[in-house]
Length: 135
Image 1 (cartoon, rainbow, N blue to C red):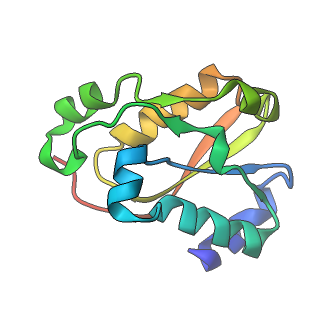
Image 2: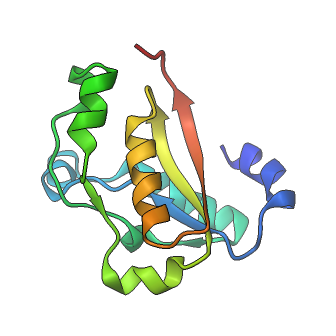
């Protein structure tokens, strides 16, 4: 992922923000770490971009996405994310790189990106480590 990020940096504004897809508090406690944050912090170190793990919160502890089909995933994630008031000023007009470990249907990325855009981000791109088959 770091090599791919390096090749994309020539077209990237140096003010772009790395925002990991957050886990709910319950899922974070269960897993012990957020894999998207682990990727984002390493990307920040390698690229010099600013990582903002606090820019997006998962406010709903949704069902595990792996158990659901595409339509259920979209419904499951409605209103699952929130941009805290304290982060809104940092997002205004910014190019955001939404970081996740895996994408299947894109439902999580879609809902997270829409939440960031509604909060004032100027553009959201998805940086993901792996893609699985879609249903």
